[in-house]
Image 1 (cartoon, rainbow, N blue to C red):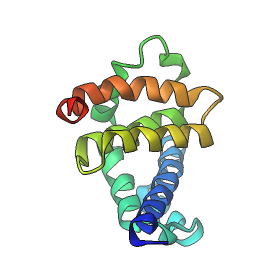
Image 2: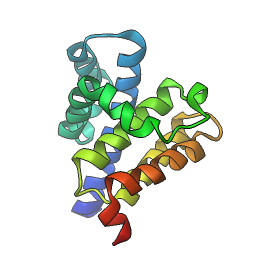
Image 3: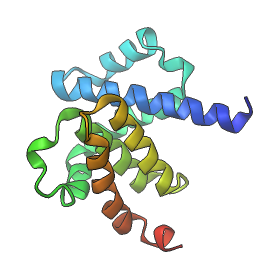
Length: 146
């Protein structure tokens, strides 16, 4: 496996574990440091991109309200279908679209859709894609036109 493939695999692992950790935080209200320790010691986070996992874990919760405002305008008619898994998938993707312009928007959408296929309800990947596509028009207009 080359370095780029290894990097991509570690980044996917970090997103996967961050989704689980953010879900736990949202439902339990546990302290982020406790969640961090639990995931580092017992959930195999260290085999992934640990730095990226920590960035997602510590940067998303304090910004959750402003992140939610960005994507929620595209949720229309599905507000009641937005469960904690989908919420946190959309938070991770929105954070990446906003804070990581080096990650192509197509990669952000693809990763979010894959998380939704793995952890979400039956059609949540379609829902996630339907929310992120217009959000990309807003946040990555130049890249999408490009």
